Structure formats: C-alpha cells, structure tokens
Amino acid sequence: MVGDPGPYLLLAAVLFVIGAFGVISRRGAITILMSIELMLNSANLALIAVSRFLPGDGGAGVPDGQVIGFLVLAIAAAEVAVGLAIVIAMFRLRESVDVDLARLLRW
Amino acid sequence: MPEFQHFAALPTLVPAAFGLVFLVFAPFIGSDKKWMWAFTTAAMGLTILIPAIILSKIGLYGDVLETAGVAGQYMVRTDRLALWLDILFGIAGLLALLVTPAYLERANSHRPEIYPLFLIAVSGMTAMVGSDHLVMIFVGLEVLSITLYVMCGLARERAVQVEAALKYFLLGAFSTSFLVFGLALILGATGRLDIPGIAGAVLGVGAGTLWNETLLLAGLALFLIAFAFKVGAVPFHFWVPDVYQGAPTPVTAFMAAGTKAAAFGVLLRVLYAGFSGAETIVDRWAPVIAGLAVATMVVGNVLALVQTRVKRLLAYSSVAHAGYLLLALVPATSGAHAGEIVGGPALLFYLFTYTFMTVGAFIVAALFQSDREDADHFAQFAGLWHRRPLLAAAMGVFLLSLTGIPPLGGFTGKYVIFLSVLDAGHPVLAAIMAIAAVIGAAYYLRVLMLMFIAQPEEDLAARLVTPGPARLALAVAVVATFVLGIAPFVLYDPLLTVMRAAAF
Image (cartoon, rainbow over all chains, first blue to last red; front, side, top):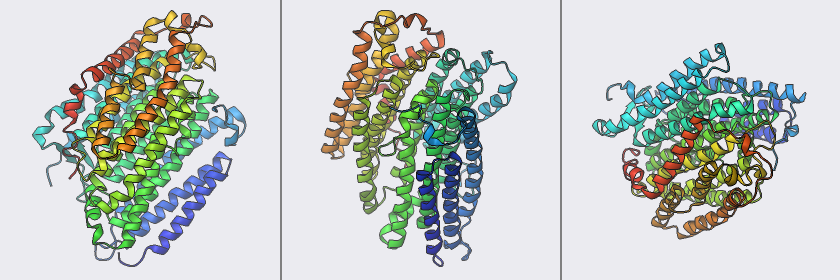
C-alpha cells in the first residue's frame, strides 16, 4: 500500500451500515431503493479508494477499482430501472408502496 | 499469452445473442403464436449442444480455454467445471420451457417475452461459472438476477407475482451491495480480482501484514453473505418461500435449479481455486460453511414440516437441499486441493440429480395452475392417483427421490456427498446430514400419502391437462432420476475429471 486508505474505507463502511439500516428499518419501497443505492455507492467509494492507494504504476495505483466502479454504476442503473418498474406495478395494484402491505405471501 | 479463442465464450454468447434478438421481436407478435416458444426451445437446445461439443474436444486444448484478456488478465475461463454446469443450465431451462406454454395458458397470462428471458438468464449463469475473474462473476450474477426479477413479475396484474418480484428484487439488490463491497475489500487486500491473483496473495499470507489478512477475511465474509442470499442458506433464506410461491411456476423451477447450480459453481471455483491455498485462511472460512450447511439443512427441513401448499413445501425443500450442497462444499474446497478426489464431483453430481427431481416436481405443480388462488394447496393433490395415475406416479418418483429413497437419483446423490464428507474426516457433519434427511422424509411422505391413499374431494383432475411438451419434460425428468439412481457411473465417472483444471 502507498499511503493508507483506512479513513476512506471507514467512511465507506459507515455509509454502508447506514444504508443497510435504512433497508431494514424503512417501509417505503422507494426509500429502501435509495438505501440500497447508498450501499452500492459506499462500495464504489471503497473500490476507488483501494484502487488509488494500491502499489503499482509508479504510485498512481491500479486502475481496476475505478473501471469496476463504472461497471457497478451501469449495473445499478439497470437494476433500479427494473426495480422502479416493479414498484410502479405494485403501486397500481395497491395505491401504496408500503412493503408491509405486501403480505399475500405468508405462511 | 495464448491466442485469442472466441469459441471459449460461445456457451455465453449463443444464449445471449438469441435471447436479445428474440426479445426485440417479442412485442411484434401476437401472444397466441407458438413460434416464439418453438424458436426459444430450439435455441435452448443449441445452448446445451455447444458446451457438450466443446466438452468432448476439450482434452485437445489442455482442459481449459481462456479468452477475453483485459490488461493482461483473462476474464473467460471455459473448463470442464464450467461446461458441465453450462449443460445443466440448458437442461433446467429446457425442462422449464417445455411446460411454460401450458402454464401460461392455464394462468391466462400470455406474455411471449418470458421465453427469450430464459435464454438471457442462462447466458448470465454461464458467464458466472465460465470465468476466473470476480468482476465477470459479478456481471454474470447481475444479468441472471435482473432477468429473474422481471420474469417473476411479468404478469403485472397479478398481485402475488408483483409481490414476489418486489421481495426478490429488494433482497437481491441488498445482497448485491454486499457482494460489491466484498469485492472492494478483496481488491484492497490482494490488489487483484482474478482468482489466480487472489490465490497467489492467499499463499503469501504468512509473509504479508495482518492488516491485509483482516481485510481479506472481511471481503470473503461479505462475498459469502451475498452468495448465501442467492442460494437461500439459513439465516438468509426468508425470501425463498415467498418468491418461489409467488413466481410463475416454470420460473420457480428454473430458479430453484439454475440459480442454485450457478451460485454453487461459483462458490466451488472461488473457494477451491482462490482461497484454499493457506491453512490459516481455510481454518477461518471452512467452519462458517459447515455451520451454514448444518443450519440450512435442519431449519429447511423442520420448517417444511408445517407447510400446507406444495410450492411452499418445495421451496423449503429447496432450502434444505441448499444445505446438503453447502455440506458438499466442505470436502470439495477445504481439503487443500484434495477436492479433485471426492468433494467436487459429489457436489456436481448432486446438482444434476437435484435439477431433474426438483424441476420435475415443480412441473407437476405448474400443471395444477388455475385461476384459483389455492391452486397448489395440498387438498388439490388429494387422490391424484385415482384420477391421474401417471401424473401421480411421476410426482411420486420426484418426491421419493427428494427424500433420498434408493434406487433413485436423490439417494445416490446424497450417498456420494455423505461419503465425501466422511472421507474428509467430518463424521459429525455426516450424521447431522442423515438426521436432517430423515426429518425431511416426513413431509414428502405426507404429500405421497395424500396423493395415493386419500380420496379426491372434488373433481379437480378432470380439469387437468398435460400437453405433449409437458409430458416429454416429465418423462425426461423421471427417466433421468431413475438412470442417475441405478447407473450413477454414467454421469459420476466423467465428473471425476471435472476439478482437474479448476485450480491453477
């Protein structure tokens, strides 16, 4: 390691935990989606940080993490497109995006 | 660097290309036309044929084909492990496709888009297992997952399906973020995301710093959590019954067999080739896998006891089977490259038997689909033997095989896992597996008794139709279940070489 990515990883971990808490505690499907986006972006921050501080290329880091960051952005966009479509279908049926109302499937 | 070999990526490219082309045409054809189904089924047959042909020739290429190098790193790795699993995905897709028109007819939801989506999901699976780069595995997993979210909720007007899609999507995306964060930490610890690079870093862990090792283990833990979600291991299983019950039944069948095989293929390759080099590292994660396996086997089987719906029962049975497969991972991956002998082939053999018996059982459940909400309730199956003896016999074969009764495939599959776990020196784990299988027998036998002894309450069976393709799928699944039970060597012996080129 060239330098210490520790503070960045710590920030990323804090954001990740906040996002995970949001997913678990919120009831609105949109808010849960936003929390998942926060988690994915915290992972992106960690990717870019470790990529910058890895030895290699004369101290400029290795580009892998940054390239992967772009891949994650694109895939997350595709995921959200499908997710919002599902949420809209849910809203048309229920007039609400509250996930607690989704209780047809229970044992 | 060996020369660029495009045909190493054919098992992924063929279903992806056909799937995308068909998907473009799907909106322009009438929903009652059968040719979209016919073309997709033919393309699915081709996606079984191509890996089979490459597999027969792979010895000529030193057991492995690699291509698509990015910055000196390979991203596609087509070896025996990948090719056998590619064939398995094709079989699962084909069996599910054969029953889909009958299901859509009865569910009264005509959506021709569902057919090409099967092909795209298969291309995601083949990308996952045919790679030795964690980023490619991530991309393949997302192609598969996003396609499955759509397939689950395709019938937008049916609340049950939309609800299943929503739950699957939210938990799937949640687990994806664990995977990405895990990748970041593994990259930080090793500087590499290709499996040979990770394996090199793991080998040198004694010489490395402790800071690196902590990061590596944290990354691996997040990676395992993400895949535990995908295979439905306890305690990450709670989405499985809801999604399996809510999704269209052919999609459930495909999901239960295909997703599980893809995820276990990745776990086998990553753990065996990437993380099994150093004893100190193996000692950290092998007990975690064993613990997940025990929890999954026991909880899955116990919760299945109280179910009253066939699809939900099969969902919990699928959780339990994820436990048996996780248990097979222990000897397959943690024996410091001894997996070549016992574990890997046992895991793959069970994946094949599991595919035939569980897809078969879900196909029978799919034939029960009607407009009624309780179409898969136990009461509907009462006295099936008196009305539809052949259908009842087929379901009986699948359930007995899932229980693990000789001479059916489910028995030989469980037996080879049991032996490999014993061989690796884990008698306690093997004993727990046997006990869990005995608990499991209770709920399968309950359905069997209902089908064969009880009298039908209403004349439901008169409304059941089994069209030709569905009969063919059931016949294939029944024959395969018998063949794998009576003559397991036809599949098991070829599988013995599967781990040969999986390590580096």
